[in-house]
Length: 254
Length: 296
Image (tube, rainbow over all chains, first blue to last red; front, side, top):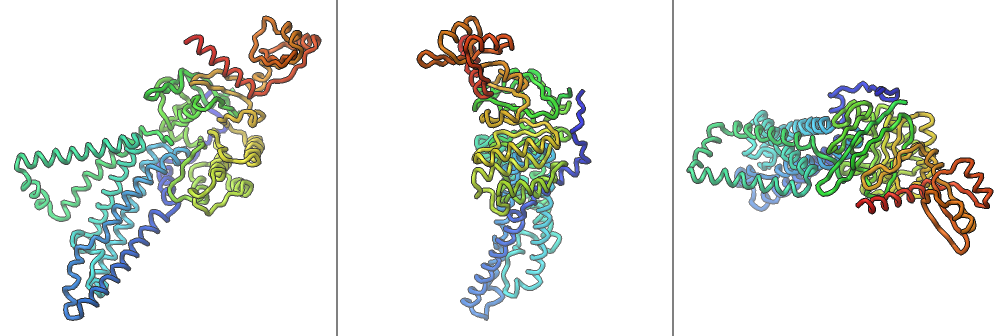
């Protein structure tokens, strides 16, 4: 008796449903694509103005060294924090909306994850290309640094990789906190932050008491620059999995 | 008759509150159901359980024969329009109508366009800046144009003016006639939707107190007006649902009368009138409250 004649046997596959969620996240590209690049553009323009001012003040003779300090530029870092906020909004606000569209939590989370990986790839590629141009033009002809600061590595592929894993890390840390928010609201987020703080404190205490800080530092030396970044993928995957299981039992309450 | 929804012994308990208490009912295919009750009666919770948005504490829910929880083959046939739907950050109505067809196989874009015009909804304004009524009309349009085999409207008209509400009711009825589907409408504006409803489920304090065909429900009570003496002598020994009186006149609502009894009442000089769905439900809800008090 359970079959009915109005039910649609839609030609929907798990993949098509997941990609529909990805399209939903991208339906309004303003917040997640247009605006971040615009802000980067503004930061870049402002940096160029500052570089020109410094050159004007320092005079032409010391051109080579004047802007050496900008190799520690933090102009890019905002984008990672911004992407964490994007992930928080994408999960917390779009989740109740998508469920009204008849999307399962599973498809929603996987579609969001695809979106985050795609955005990470897009931004990493764009930034790595800009870094190449920056290096090739000797800092846009001014000796300045914004896209290729030294802590993002050297060479196109190394930077591409580091940009990519850093984006992924911030996206999925954002997802797990948004999932906690959706499921347990402010109480949950507070508890999670406290727990995380205690955990870090505990690890720090153990390292101090056992006098293992050199070993801890040795870890990064052992795995090297790129290898240390690669280890962040472990945390990213843990955050991604935790977000999935937390969201699967969450209810969209207004 | 095929059932689209079968609910058995459903209970939902929140930390301090039992919102739904051992509820059993079924919903037939291609009918318009009213899920009625006072605020906080448990209407929204039931809808959230039926659409897999919330998890039952105990009991069983079958929608299209299967549990709706995380079940894509069930959920893709459902459209759930909520009173206070939130939209993604910086969305404009055009983004909603662009994305809806990706999720609703039966989406009718022309129908949606026509409704957008009728409801005078601006497409290119940020949703955050829309009025309460415009916000509601987005939900109403999505719910209608999605033509999902099972559509839930949870108080969908907050902030809509009387003209827009009438437009919603008329459009729902006309489109339902052409494209039959199961609609569950939750509301406390009972009289406004009374003519739409084919079946009425009334919930009060988490329990179902009425689950009845709308027509037969209406015939379960009659209003009698006449002189106090004539009324009192006629209603003596009957189940009285409500009593009013001014001076020597009395108005009494009694439980269902047979055609024969109605003739007797007319002969006794009483005037008979139908009881509106709203009155009926208000009175039944009061009755049940008293019963709860007595049993407590």
